[in-house]
Image (tube, rainbow, N blue to C red; front, side):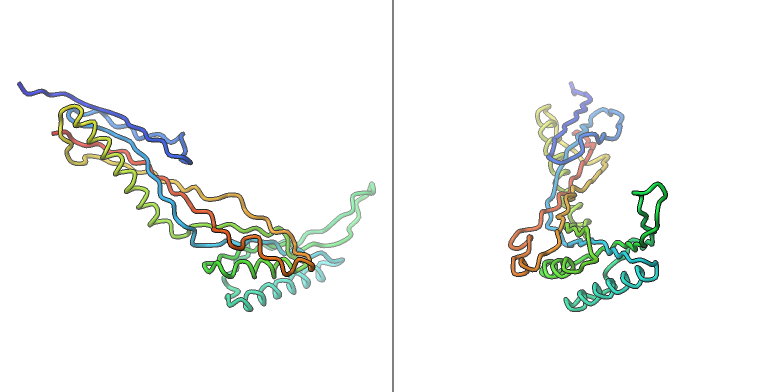
Length: 240
C-alpha cells in the first residue's frame, strides 16, 4: 500500500543582527511538499568611506557671512585638489543663510548672520581619509565632522547571503524529508528578503589642536568595521 501524506514544516534559524519582526509569506499547505524558512548572512568589507562635515560662517552682515562661507568652500576645494580628489566628488546637502538674534533683552536684537552648509565626501581610497580629515579639522569654519564606512556595491554581498540562506533551507528540508522516509524533490516556490546591518555610529572628529599636529590619526592602524548583509529564504520543495 502506497503511503500518501502531507508534510509542512517551518524551520527558523535565527542569525545575529537580523530583524526578528520580519514575517514569512503565507503559503497554503500542499500534499507531498515541505516548506522551510532559513536565514543566512554574509560579511563584506566596506568599499566607501563617508566623510561628512558642516561649513558654518558668521559675520555682522549677510554679505560678509556669505563671502566668508564662499572662501571656506574654496579652502575645502583646495584641500581636495591637494589630495588628488576632484572637488566635484564633494556633495552639498544644503546651503542656508539665517539671522542671529540676541534674546537676552525683552526685545530681540539682530546681531549677525550665519551661513551653514553640509558637505558629504565619499572616498574609495581609504589612505586619503586621515589626511583629509586632519586638514579639514584645521579650518576654523568647519564643524560636526563624522566618518563612517559603507558598502556601496551591495549586490554581490546580497547574492552571497541568499546562497547561504538557501543552502541552509535545502539542508533542513532534506533532513526532514529523510526523517519521514521521503526523498526531497525540486524547488516549487521560493521567496527572498534581504537587509543590511550598516554601522550607524559615526566617528566624530574634534578640532585638532596645533600641539597635536604630529599625533597619528584616530583611525590609524584600525580596520573599518565590516558590513553584514542578512537574507531570509522561504522555499517550498516537492517530496518524492
